[in-house]
Length: 104
Image (cartoon, rainbow, N blue to C red; front, side, top):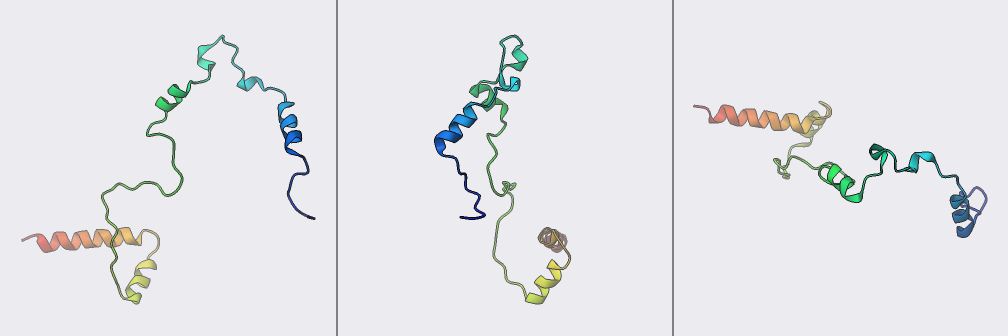
């Protein structure tokens, strides 16, 4: 295929080329300095707080609940027009409304 980004090398040729690369001193531990010693799998696991990062959306606080609520289109358009964070602002307004309504 013209313009294709496929590799013309065979698998064995690629492996041989990778194996022929010089070993970088950055990855070789000479056994002299323990601070430079590669971490064991157990040490790496202990160093990772909360485990490895997962892909996707960050986990929420767990204090919010997703609900479906229906607003008129013009209301939603006006809220969205206020910019990013409009849902958080709606939540704050609703909380303030509840607070004022419940106070004697």
